[in-house]
Image 1 (cartoon, rainbow, N blue to C red):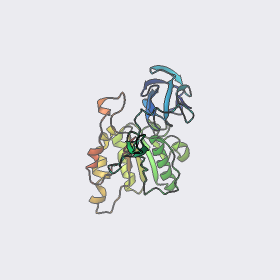
Image 2: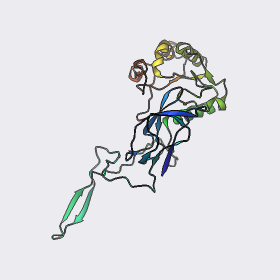
Image 3: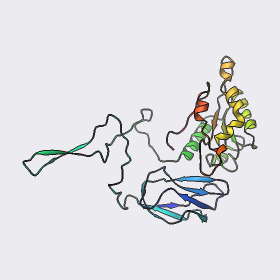
Image 4: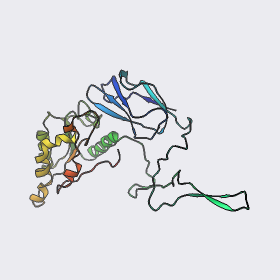
Length: 288
């Protein structure tokens, strides 16, 4: 059995409002699946399951305010819990070339055999990434923590890498992506900025041209509109327009697309748009 506790979504969070459940008792969840929305004094954030299993019970109803951090809010059945019903559709990966599995059984009359279709369970297909070493140890994590770990890895490897943006330092990131980076790397490499995307994006582009490797965080990518001239006409085109003499190694990052309880001007997806610009490379998780 797995206990689901009220998470601390910021270093200073003591309680929050459980605004919405995305699951109910009897549902089967997988690791990384969004199971709830929790409102803090800063924002409404989605909470993901860290384990898989069947939801045994919801202990805190949605809409409950002032739920203390580490309060037990739900339970999942673990390995020793109830078995998942076989009538539930199996979440399996398939390929077009996969053939239906069959089971051969002897009939009672004359020993003739019959084949029963086992496609309801689905073929077991082992997916492998050729770029991952065979002996690599894989761990389950959230997209938020994976982004943080990737930035920390690059900042440890290269002291020219730094992070700049709104609330990335003292507040640990508006969505906690930069959690604990300030403590490890200091305020010279994790830099809080005023609310001026045009300003700090320009600073980042200039720093990149001067030989540094900035990570510029937009609180959401909608706000990249304020800095679009720096992104398109400076960062993306400088290498070409300078004949290869001036490079701009820079990353612009932030959440993108629609979210819960935000306005229309905060709900746009610019990934396809930016992908049309020569000099820019757009990367997004395919399933998060």
